[in-house]
Image (cartoon, rainbow, N blue to C red):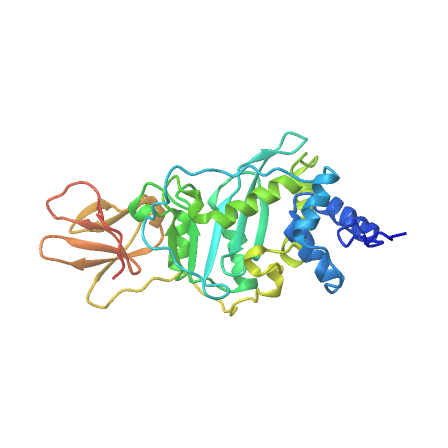
Length: 334
């Protein structure tokens, strides 16, 4: 009598032990896909016999634990407004944004301010604020600079409190950043994909911390703080070879700076008054309320005077004009 050649145990047969581990991990991280789940299992169990991501994906479907992700589609290729900096190490580029507001169960509005290191994907801060006023945002950044050092570049969208319709698109907050020696990069209007990894982090945070929202802002902040520890220290990232950001991020040099702008000795220097004006050639000329309290530099030209804030050209003054400063056609550095 011939015996069957079928093996006693199929190598593709579901392992009860791995299935149990997968269920436990899935309960803790409901938005993770099969590759992230496999990377975490491999890290926990030193890679010994860990099923392939494709196998895990099949188990998730069989157990009805898989998720459908709706990808946002973009109409056409991204159009860049200037060249965006490519981060090759930690800290030179931070990406900053306000995630869309929502209400906690007690009816209070919360605005999540998020700050992230571009290179390592490490999220430096998520703070829930009641609104987008620039003074509380500045206080948060003062603490971040003291803890992590100063970036060379901050990348933001064009909305408040980061940008404005004023000279060079600067707001009170971004003027302060510029005075601290930090360059500003604005993504093109209507193109959040230029800050795509930051937006993706927002989607994960929303899925894992706000459905449903907590009862109060304080409770929601605690919930996000717990989530952030997992995101930075445990959650695998595909762009980091399925390792967490904490494996890569290190703070920058922490040294105190003051918001001071300087100009060449031969330039005229004027202080911007509380109404946003300077006095030049015996007349008051409007520069912009974002520059109140700071000094601007005036560089003489053939027909006009170029107006700079630090190294950034923000406009020009002409003696024949009776109004304010003419905005610069192209914001450029000296």
